Length: 321
Image (cartoon, rainbow, N blue to C red; front, side, top):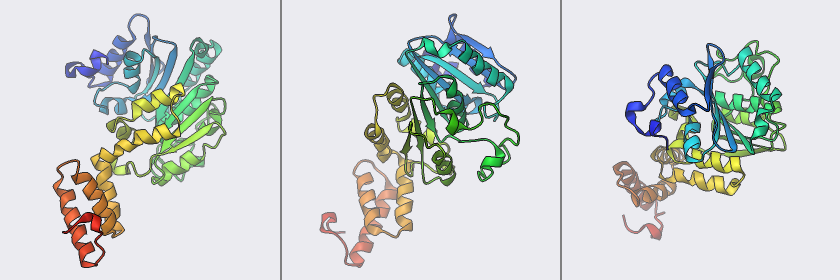
C-alpha cells in the first residue's frame, strides 16, 4: 500500500491536501487535470488494467485513508487509475465533464488497455454507469447507483429530491441505457432499502447482474460502500468482478464476513426481537457469545432461553437455563 495512505501525517485533511496527494501519486508520468470549478481528474499510468472511479471529495476525505479507493489498486495491483473527483453534489455533470469524456472516446484512450473497469457508489455509481458508454466492452461495478438524476423521472426519491436536476440536459442522461455497451455490469445494493431497490430495478439489461446485500446496512449506518469496506469485501469485489474471476457464489462468500460485523449482528438481533422469536434470538446470541465477549448478547441469550423454558419450548440442544 502507498506510504501516503499508511502515514497519518500525510493523510489529506482538505480538498487541497487531497489534490496534492493525488498529484504525488500520479508522479511525473501521470497528471491531475482541473476540468472546471467542481471537478478534477487524476490519471496514474501503471499496468494494462485501467480502473475508472468517481467520488465526491467529501466522501474521499471521510475514508480512513483520506484517498480514493483506486489509490490502493494503483500500488497493490499495479493498475492504472483514472479518478474523477467532484467538490460538491454535481452528479458529475457539466459541459467540461461531457467534453472530457468525449475527448477520451475520440482519442480511443480506453483502447490502450487490456481491461477497463468503471466503479462508483451512490452519485459516483450514476456517473460510472453513464460515462462507461465511452468505453465499450468495459466492466462496470456499481454500489447503490442512481438510475437517473432527472427530477421529472426520479421525483419519488425523497432523499435527493431537492438535489436532483430539473434540467439535466440531453448528454449522458439515463444510466441504464448507458451500460448497454458494457461487457458486464454488476449492481450491489440492499433490497431492504426501498429507494435503492427501485433505482437498481431500472437496470435490467441482459448484461446486468444484480447482487443483493440483504440487510447489510441501514440509512442510519451510512452508505453500503462503507460497510463493504469495513467487512473487507469491497476491494476483493472490485478486483474479482473487474477481472472476471468472481461469480455470484464468490460474492456471497465475501458478504459472509458480515457474520462478524457487530452493526449487522445488532440489527439482526433487533429484527428477531421485533418478530418476538425467542428461538432466533437464542441462536443468534449463542453464535455471537461463542466468538466474543458481548454482555448485551449474553443478556438477550439468557432472556430468550428463559422465555422458551417458560413456554415449554426449550430445545434440548440449548441445555438447561
